[in-house]
Each structure stands twice: as C-alpha cells, then as structure tokens.
Length: 293
Image (cartoon, rainbow, N blue to C red; front, side, top):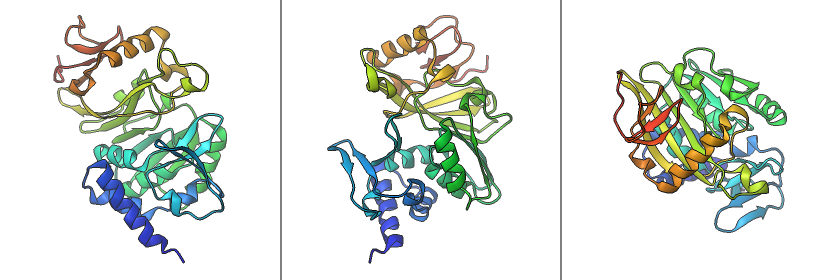
C-alpha cells in the first residue's frame, strides 16, 4: 500500500531541488496538499515535455507526484502546470501568513490551495477562473479552505482593492492596470509575460511561443522587476492578450533577447525607448532601476 504522506514529502523535496531553491514554507505546502484531489477522477492524462502525452490507466495517484503537467481541458489547452515551476514562482511571490492574495487563472484550484496554506487562516485568497467548468470545480475543491473565495470572471477586472500578492497562471501580453495599481509598498506580482510565436497556427497559438516569468515588487521608487525563468503558458484572451501591435512588439523583443536584464516596469513609459527592452505608448520594461520621477 502506498504511503501517500511519504510520497508527497519526497515529491516536495524533489520539486525544491529541480527549482534550485530552499523554501521551507513552499516545501511544506507541496508536501501537504493532495494534488489528486484537484484533477477529477482518474485515469488522468499527463504531459511530459520529454515524451509527450501519457494516458494513465486506473487511479493510482503516484504518477502525479512527478514534475509533470496534468490535462484539465484538452480542447482549451489547459493543464495543471509544472510543480517545480510553480515552486519557483511561489518562492519569489513570498506569501506570508495573513497576506491578502489574488490568484488569477486558478484552474481547478490546486495552486490556490497552496496559496491558502501559505497565507494561513488569517490570510485571504481570492481565486479567479475564466472557464466556467473549472471555476465550478475550484469552488468545490477549495471548500476545505475557508480563507478562499473562488469566483468565475475576467482576471483583468480584479482586484478591487489593495492586495499583498498577485499570482497569475497564464501568459499575459498586456498586464492589467488593476494588478499594478493595487500593489501596496512591498506588494508583489508574479506573472508570465508571453505571446504566441509569430508563425504559430491553430492549437499552437493557444500557448506562448516566447515567454518569461517576471516578479514585480512595488518600492518607494516604483515597480522593480526581476526575470525568473523562461516559460510556456496558455495565452490570455481579451484585453490581457494585448493589441496586435503590442504582441508584435513583444515578439520582436523576445527574439532580440535581453529580458533577463530588465529592472523596472514604467507607466507612463520613458519618453524614448533607448533604455527599454520593450516600449509601448502605455508602458515599458526598462533596463534602468525604478525611478519615482
């Protein structure tokens, strides 16, 4: 008989090693929350970058405790994402007990549950999911966490007030103004910036051809930015997908390279783009440090 508690502890430790981090709080919640409770009844379909889709037989949860994606909605290209990538992102999000947290793109709620454990009973987590059937699943799956409110909606319309941490789980071309405006001093936003590859067609356009996870923190001088890792996520729709011109500009910037040297988010942007990795009339990602002026 499988010792699931020991399996989860081993899984959590391995995700820490793969992510290259030490974070006792993130390791603890990975070892605590049962991943299989958020994936519907087995058998499940895994996505392993090295071998592709793996159709499991039966409902043995052991294969879920590897660094694999699990299909949630094949038609929409939606998955429960890489645990090691999320471990890295959660580490840099830095949720503390008592924090107010917004989770945008909650899926069926697994990573929301990790956020809820990190925020603790005195914290609050609002989970937003655009797809109605996944939002319904998240509400059901997250009932054991009374500090979570799971809602169906457009993540660009949230939050409606200050929150300490914002965690986004799909590729965004045009970060929502509400996310930036509602970060208090020391507040952190972690999100994937990404666009489909220029020549992608059909299903391939659902996922980012170019992408990078960014951590943004409000400081006294402005929004400081740190590049965390390249990534591939399902792409946003609606306003968060940006205009065609903005997506083309981001695509060129990714091809040119250098996002790892970005240090600040500017809105309004600097008058000229010379010191910017990406520049648009509305906002920019600059190589310079935050500048309150």
